[in-house]
Amino acid sequence: MVIESVKKLCIEGAIRWTDHAIVRIAQRGISRADVKCALMTGGIIEQYPEDYPYPSCLMLGNTLDNSPLHVVCGIGNDELWVITAYFPDSTKWNDEYKNRMEK
Image 1 (cartoon, rainbow, N blue to C red):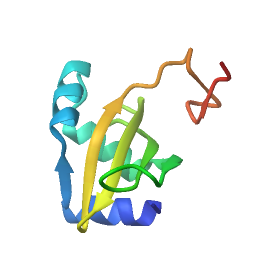
Image 2: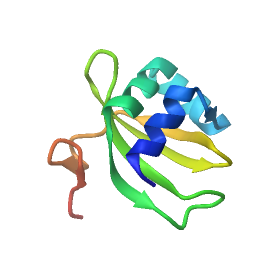
Image 3: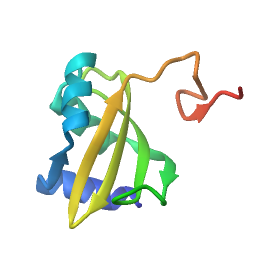
Image 4: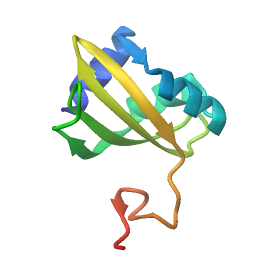
């Protein structure tokens, strides 16, 4: 996946929200606007080319209030599928939430 495709689909409004994403962002107090902002301001930090049903990636962007946000999304059938979003945990991520800490 490339960031330009993610942003293009986001601008076009071609976003599909999985049931899992809807439940999780509600539980975590994250708005859809925050997720869209993170998609538009962010970059891809991990790729998951073997994910099913579509290849996906992990993005790091910022919410409307400039908090870091991770978003897992995939592209399929000319749509951007939001799989989940969460605030990264500083005990699990380093380098400004871009790299997983060693176990």
